[in-house]
Every structure is written in structure tokens, then in C-alpha cells.
Image (tube, rainbow, N blue to C red):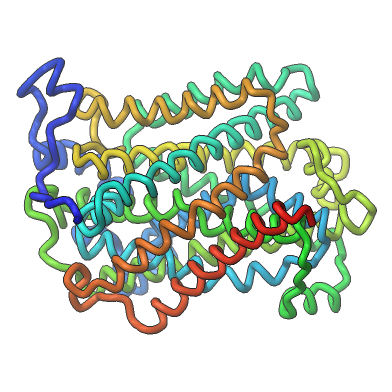
Length: 477
């Protein structure tokens, strides 16, 4: 049985023990922080609508881009960059087709997560807890936490490795892990949500280096077109594991929760919802704006994915470098653009992607936990108002730091993180798709045939890929 939910968040657990009764009401918190959030340029509908964007021109469309763009850009995190680089170097152009294949699937999944949040006015964890038995949802969130912890650790290690590469080895990568973690924690604790939002938007630009480089690599056009539109499949352990890794780093569990929580935060900032009263109902203009944002964000994500695989295949695989092991080897893929300075562009891109993705990884885990247990908190709230939220946020980063002292190879760890995400995603997707198809929850915005087909396909394909991987591992092929 699902747990009954009054809709009112529980008091902050730390404040309940340390300072009973000192916690301000959630609606008061929303009013205090709404001025900060308004700096993101969002109107009182929660976001710029498509019609408003058309009237404002280019600036309006920039304002239209919000959670979907950030989610899409964070999808190309160091784990994604490392995975795509390894896949391109190992299999050449053989997996380019996955970029076209995953685009409609991940767009449908992220649109569904956004639609659920906009309809219910609460995060994904809370919505799942209301519909499904608590142990089932708890198990799914535990899987998310395990995947996120490994992903955070791998991404921290990659950012540190990039910093070491920039110093030409003068600084050991392990020395940089703790300073990077402190920088991220400081940004989350002391910066306003609006400031973080702006930083995230600008950091997405670092990923375009891979798109530009592909044109300098001069890949064989006919071979690239063929690999893009005609799926290449191998029934081997390495190939199936690569497919699972690409799917896992593209349709990642942490993105489901981040998309939904970001939509709720935008609504709260605009006064369009609150934890006590919930949502008066989703407006079609909001849904259209969210869909546009999601489509652009996912297109951006898949474009970068496509060009990282393409560039790695053209520069590394074509010249016999089929096993990327270090950050320096991965950086070599950018040599056609920057020559001996390729390591600088690669390092800056990896650092930018990490600083974009790690707060989202820890944030999505924190949102999932607080929504599951029903207490308040968001990146828009102040640490003294919601200390439990920020404590979990900090512990998520600390867990990633600890993982780096297990002496895992940073580049290999990025690939393993992607594989773990690919295994954790199918069960979570099954719950989310079921929630979106529930008319009692979604009302008139219940998933239609296209959404059900695409999200169902994503669930089945990822499940089959993960099962096939385990079968080939057990069979020793």
C-alpha cells in the first residue's frame, strides 16, 4: 500500500531536535527567497511561455530555457565525456546511431518527469511515495543513491585529473579532490539559487569544443552517415556493456529527479504552488514551455554525445588508439583543433562539465531523500532554515570524495558509473511510467499513446540491455 500523504512537509529533523519551533513556515521561506529566484527571469507562471518568448525575440528564448537545458547539459558530465570517448575509441563509428535512437526516448522520459512535477506540484520522490508502497520506492531510491555516489566520486576524480593535466602533472590529481569538493559545497551552501542557475547556463558552453573539433578531424562522410542511420550491433560482452554505459549516462536516474525538482522549484519561486496548498492545476502554456525547454536540452545533450563519439572515433580509433585509459589519452581526441594545447581545452571542458554535473548529482540525491521522508528544503532555502537538506547535500559530496581514496582509475571509473546508471534506471523508469499513466494523479495530462510508447520503449530497451550484459558476463563471452 502507498503511504497516505497530507501534503504538508514535516518539520526539519535537525531543527526539531536542536531548536523546536524555530523553523519558519514553508510559505514564509518561499516569500523570503522568491526575490532571489526571480533573477532567473521567470514570470509568475513559473517560466517564460512560448508566446512570451516569441514576443521578446532571442532574449525571450534564452529565458525560456531552464531546467530542461540544465538537465540536458549536465547529462554530458565527466562520466558522459569519459564514456563517449572510450566508446568512440574502442568501437569507432559503430555506436553513433545511439545518439539518434536515444534522443526521442530521453526527451519523452524527461518530459514525463517535468509533466508529473507540473501537475502535482511536488517532486518525483513525493509523487512516487504517494502512489507506490514505501519499501518499493525506498529500494528504488537506494539504487539511485548508490549510482549517484559512484557517479559523484568518478566525476570528482575526473575534475581533479583534469586539474592535474592543466598543471602538467605538477599537482597530483588526488590532492585536488578535496578542494574541488569544498568549492562545490560552498557554491551550493552560500550562492543563491539564481546565481547557481546562471552559472549552470554558462558552463554549458564548454561542451561545444567537442562539436567544433569534429570538423577539424575530417572523418569519412559516407561512413559516418551510414553509422548514424544504420544500427551496428555486436553480441559481445564489451559491446553490450558499452551500450548499457551509453544508455546509462544518457538516460540517467539522477536526471529524472533533478528535472522534476527543478520544475517544482521554479513553480515555488513564482508562487504557483506551495507545500500546503499544492497546485491548482497544470496550465497548457506551462506544459508547452516545459516541452520546448526539454526538447532543446535533450537535443543539446545528444548533439554533444554524438560529436564526442565521432571525434574520438576519427582521431583515436582511426589511428589505432582503441583503449583510452587516462585523461591525457582522452584529451588527444581534441588534437586536430588545438594541437599540443588539446589538453587545455579538454581539461577546461571536463572541469566545466564536472562543476555543472556534480551539484546536480548531489542535489538530485538530496531531493529524492527529502521527498521520500517528507521534510522540506531546496536549493532556494537557506541552510539555517533547512539544515537537514544541506547536511545530506554535503554528505553526498563527502561520500564521493571518500570513493576517490580507493585508488580507482578516474577514466575507467567514469565508464563504470555509466554502467551502474544503466542498471539502476529500468526499475525507476517502470515506476515513473506507471505514475504518468495514472489518470487519478495526472488527470487530463495523463500520458498519451506517443509518450507511453517512447517511455515504455526506453524502459524495455534499457532492461533488455542490462540483462543481456549480465548474461554475457556470466557466460564469459
